[in-house]
Image 1 (tube, helix red, strand yellow):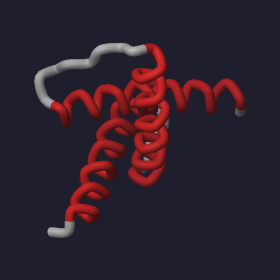
Image 2 (tube, one colour):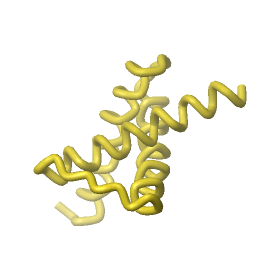
Image 3 (cartoon, rainbow, N blue to C red):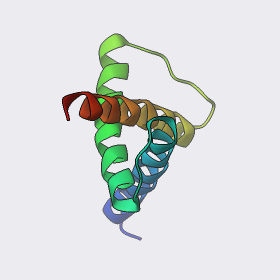
Image 4 (cartoon, rainbow, N blue to C red):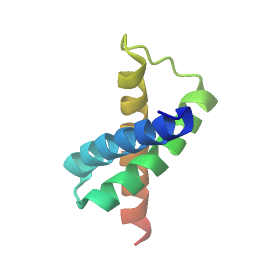
Length: 84
């Protein structure tokens, strides 16, 4: 499999899981919405973790990415609910 395709599929999986976790925490739903929320949350979470230098080490890189993306997705959904 092409490495770029594999990378995109991994990010979609992370986005789906993170969006689903965010929808459990703050509500919402739909698979497309979960993926989009999770992907945006991954960017936001990654920025915040880097900016504030927060160590995240759960033992598995995939788990770290999902937790960071889920926290970012929760923040994105909360901000969207405040704005809307």
